[in-house]
Length: 267
Length: 207
Image 1 (cartoon, rainbow over the protein chains, first blue to last red):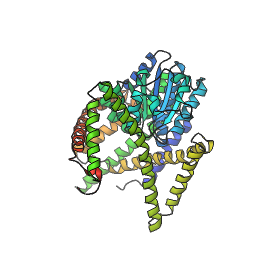
Image 2: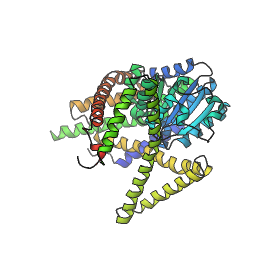
Image 3: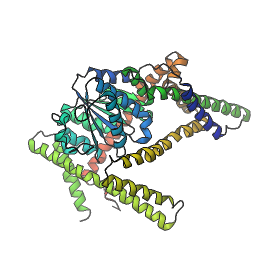
Image 4: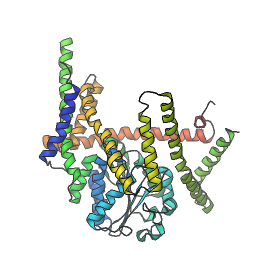
């Protein structure tokens, strides 16, 4: 039996994306344990706590990671938790800054008091280690050029000792760098939200407690939006992804059936 | 001399940084912080090196008229425009943000999105249960894929996500831990070799 032309496969994938988007399919999303742990940890933080959010992803992973980052920021601003945004990725500052400002505007958060975005500094490991002793030694100004000493919410924050949780939204191995250099070295509590591609390598750290919670790709984003009570793009895209996964599973099954028929005929 | 100096520096800083991890003495901690500050200053040089390498590579492509050499001009145009706007107008400038949001962002997202099409096609063509191991991999992949989306739970009465979680928590975790331990032991032994000057390939050239 001949193979299906790859162009037909491409059209089927396109249809599996477009049709559920147009029909606004809404499948129920249950919450996994790692996501629930993440949410519970943030919920347990008292008002006035500080979370450092590392936006360690570029535009290619924006679709997966922006929805979960947005849901977390909404939860933080609703709970009066202060947010320090940073990034170890060179092409992330513009998207991270825009995202924080968008959520802050929606929730009425004030720059410098409820949140600050410090931007990017080169040398990931050195940045992580440097902030362990003094954040101002790495970031002397925020993303807009305001001196750290002039930012009200940074007055009592020197290093990780004043950061209650570090959240890394990542599309590469930065989570492991944060664990090795911030958690092991400075005992910084860390949670992560990562792309589906690298989720498998995060589970050992979740079991050891080096990650207090974990969000897994677009599914994690949908679960978190569900918990925060703010369904948005994560919920929309997980429904679309459902049909693409179903299509790929179907294609694999068809491919194997044709393979076995072909092999039986040859024998 | 060209090789001895880096070897001595590597040995001295390697040993000093190891000792700072075991000594809470103020001098030890001061040394540690000072070296981290130096490393932060050295960090940006990697960006300069990357930029120089990029320019050298694409200049050579244009000079030799290799295949698709014309696209190297696009690389230079992108590099020069973004660097100039970034340096003189700052990345917060609306022009920089416009170029980022309307050029870089859609291009990056498009490149990544294409993967979905190629993965679907490749999965159909190559994912065959030819052997026992391949069948095991195939079944595991299908379970994880279905457990990763809500439709899997809907079709299997919540079994798919539970099975996916079991796979990630048990066989996956065990295998990953083995890999992490192996890699860590390798890193330790390689670090010792570099500090002691046994491993010198990082210096470049022959031994």
